[in-house]
Image 1 (tube, rainbow, N blue to C red):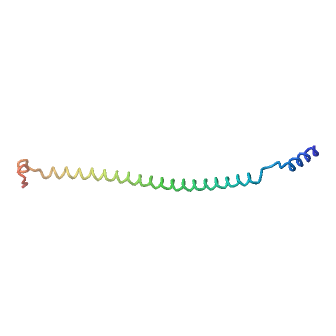
Image 2 (tube, rainbow, N blue to C red; image 1 turned 90 degrees about the horizontal axis):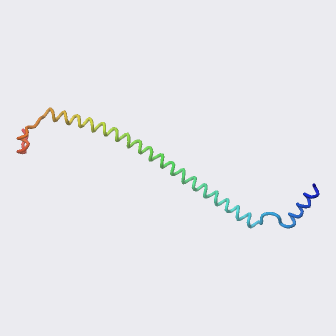
Image 3 (cartoon, rainbow, N blue to C red; image 1 turned 90 degrees about the vertical axis):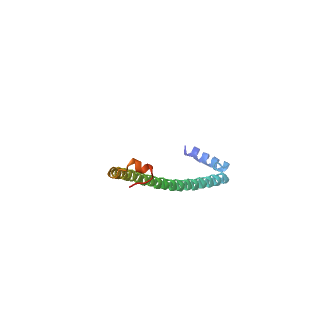
Length: 100
């Protein structure tokens, strides 16, 4: 068995059994380029994820502002109706353009 293995090894070595150097270098270069592309895309993804987080925060802030403005609007409408009840205007004076 050892003898058979030695013969196979010698035959493979003698016939050039292996990857040609040019082919190996081409695949190594391709692997390096793909690794660089992966790194670049990972960096882009990180930037986009940060932008998504920023926009989500801005959306949250705007939603809170909207709720606050709705509350203030309700309060102002309430005050406005109170003022209208306290200061009634006679209809005939408003038609003439004069309010006394």
